[in-house]
Length: 205
Image (tube, rainbow, N blue to C red; front, side, top):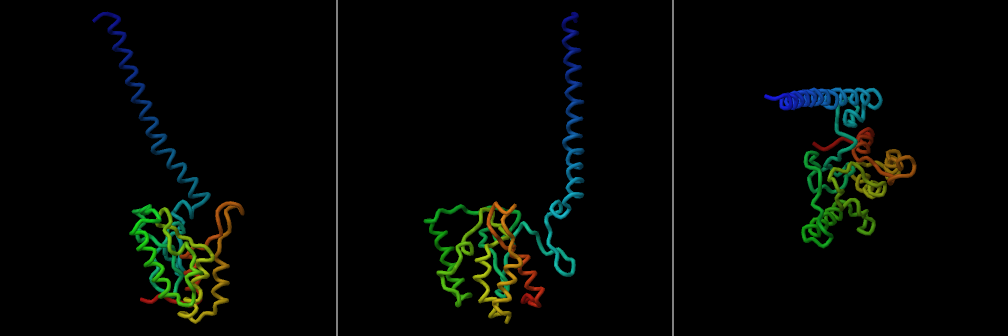
């Protein structure tokens, strides 16, 4: 083998060695060190958010996350938005139906009929659109304050709690705009229902 070929082979060997070592270094730095550092910082500065924004009941038990809605079937409690995925967190998304889609129209009409049956004291004209429409993820944990207060007459009748007390409860659990500017006022349904349980209302088993 002539010197030129030997030099080329040696260069290729050195380049391969450099590439392998560089790859291993970046695998360790980006795949192990960086995630561990970020996780450690998050655990120190914002442990609640880093661990999934979990919500605990009065017994210290995890009952859900601030970020994921839950299906509510007991009419004594506040209901969240419609979810086409039944609030399954592993299947985030929605059907993206057009307003004219027959399945969309059928589902909406069923939601309206269910509202009329369960909330006879609140006319359809007072039904907030947010209670019969999906969110983009199907996991929205929030409703508008208006959507919560529209349910107050039903809950008052079923629990015996005064409507004024329930409206105050909604106000106390209403979150403002982010930084006072972004988004809309909203109510976390799970937190609101936990507050309702704090008033002595228990779920039907």
